Image (cartoon, rainbow, N blue to C red; front, top):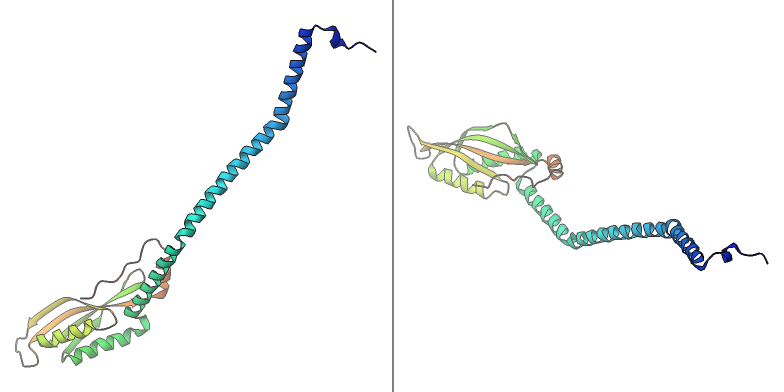
Length: 206
């Protein structure tokens, strides 16, 4: 049997060579096997944490879903109310005739009834109407009361009243007002809904 060269080395040398060989094996294992496995494990743990974060975010969103649904229902209900008090454009002539009818029903003469240029808002138009009345304080008060009971929104503003130069029983005052009506526009409402922030609402009835 041929002699092993290592057997001719001293015990200390043999131990030193064994240590070096073991170290080389460990280094090779670390870089070739353990390090890629460790890197892959770290990537998987990072991905797991990311997925867990996404799951927590989805759970939080799911918990808020009933609240979102309630908000949507409230907005839809508000829209239906607005549709009832804001006539569509096609109903404007009927609404104007209704205002004139209420004036006549209140025993007021209407020498002037002039719609002005509309003002565009988010989802509706404001249409001011310059109106002059000839009658009495009582008749004018009755007209305002009838207007306030309309289902459609009509605001009365810029009221100016002066006494007749030659009053009669049925005509003691001349009054000028601006009656503002509002027209709902569905296309404009859809566009406003896409923009951030709640849409404005028309002024309160006076």
